[in-house]
Image 1 (cartoon, rainbow, N blue to C red):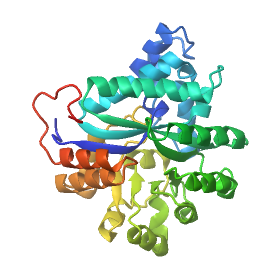
Image 2: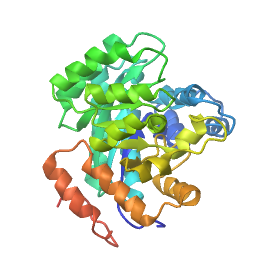
Image 3: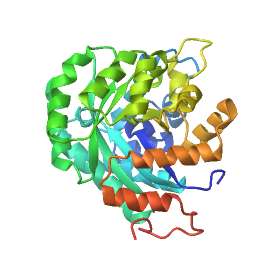
Length: 345
């Protein structure tokens, strides 16, 4: 491989990472209408178009995989195949986030969604040298999601340290007031549930400040911190990392035409940066492709990438013992033939 060292990924959406080939196969296997008459047409709609003009248009791409991921078997298989794909890219540790409420349109309960995904992640870990955890996402949507989010919070507490690492808030940033979610995150903090939050992706640097005030351990995206030196100082002083997804940000046009993406500026200022794909299939990317783009556009080096992976693992929502083992493993060369279950032995 071009980058023959272990990698970590913290910001990765399950539904946005269902490959076209896997999605079509699962639809046919489980007799699900994929929404298109043939594979070519289906595949063309599974990744973002070149003419995507904002985050809200980008989010519409999730409608395609969500047609298929409404049943337990496809959910389990999607998680399993994603885990195996990550391991093949020498990803040592990944957090796979998903919103259970988005998979209940055909009658599944949120808990059935969670257990199906966890079965798939566990199968991948049994077969490949990788450690995987799930993160449960509450959602910001145009409609009221409070009751569904309450259930997601309950399930996060129930499965915390049992395959689920923590909580997130995802969706269309800015479509509803962030204050609507304060009560939920106050409860999460009281219950000692660690959480990250999508904030400062689609503008709204003040959302980053709010997330930090509420107790977020990391910030999803957070690139609009560049607009506020006080926020940057808070991030640095409190050692709060950003989960940056460069390709996704470019595709969503989260900055105006002509503005250079601030990842290098933030890195040089001392903000902790982790590198992530966001949605491997929708963005048609991988960690290695992210590295290629950052090397080309901002002269990031292997040393930078290694440091970023160490930051990611240091701030993973993991127990201290597992984190210590993986931090040591991160420094080791990748064996020529990785053994089954090799990481934790």
